[in-house]
Length: 279
DNA sequence: AAGTCCTGCAACCGCGGAGTA
DNA sequence: TTACTCCGCGGTTGCAGGACT
Image 1: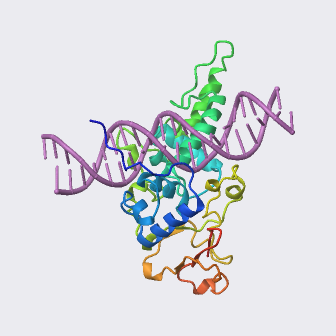
Image 2: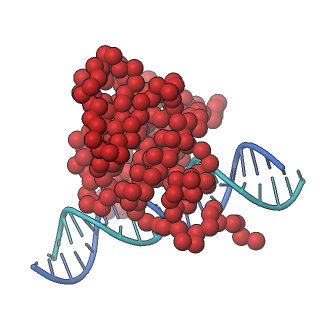
Image 3: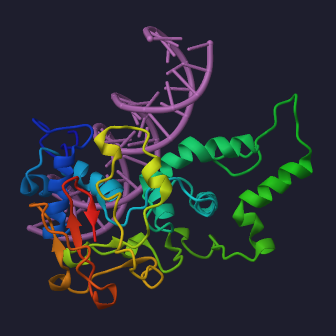
């Protein structure tokens, strides 16, 4: 007896998401929160399976998702964490706020693997690759590279916080108070908003003209004078009633100039006609 | 300019774990 | 204990766009 499909696939749409589908999904989650993905497509009026909706939301539509290439620091962290955790992308992603497991996995497979191999490091083991017979690098050089890459073996030298795998489950590492395991189901009042300014790469990295690579949330940002220092990482709304969230279907209202940031208790989100978010 | 190859990324698929009746 | 559902994870695929010939 095979496993039952996650949903009735007959008549379900596959492939890239359209702007309209994204809008429906965003509207639904903003109104109802994240719950019961299986029911989402039906309730949101989407011809998608629940898994597809969840994937689209978590990897792309979530307001706090960070777009663009990983910074050097993030990449280094990914390498370090991969050395500790292996291909546990969701665990790795939990240490990089705003990054998704899929994004990190893709980055690893397309960039980091190559980079490490180029450096003579086995991306699987983080140990020096056995050099080709013809060009054996000096042993001290290989060791040096390993020192840099393999945190488990360089912890003492760098004074970095490295988890002792023998003493505790590496998956339980809590780094910077952020662990995806601790994130509860998101309720409507808990829609997470990124305070990051859109990074230049996020707008320029789109290599495809297809809609799916033009994040409807790409323009997400606070009012220009909003104190992004204070709200550096992210913020959670304590009370849904205070979230003045406006899906501007009429495309006529412009709230972006009608608030003094200092008076703002809650940022105002307005969805524009191009499905981008504005505050 | 046209054809082919390569690359990067979004999305899909199938499995395993957790929860529950 | 078993059978079932649902969710999340990791591996893989498919496609669009860029690079190359």
